[in-house]
Image (cartoon, rainbow, N blue to C red):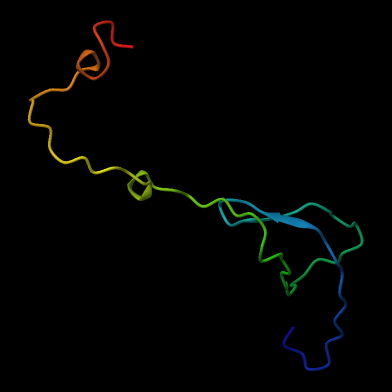
Length: 82
């Protein structure tokens, strides 16, 4: 595409970007010639994007230290642990 007199043609295709950031083209027109292409991505900026959450970023309660040594279910609830 370095030729200054190159004639460009546009075609609209649908695709999908996976969690591994690879683009998958869902339509494969048979009349495309082999060779280099330029790609312009147009996407909805407000689409729901699933973020990879780390357990370290989840909200948690900081209850301080428990001075009783151990804390078993029976001590929290009742004798049958429910």
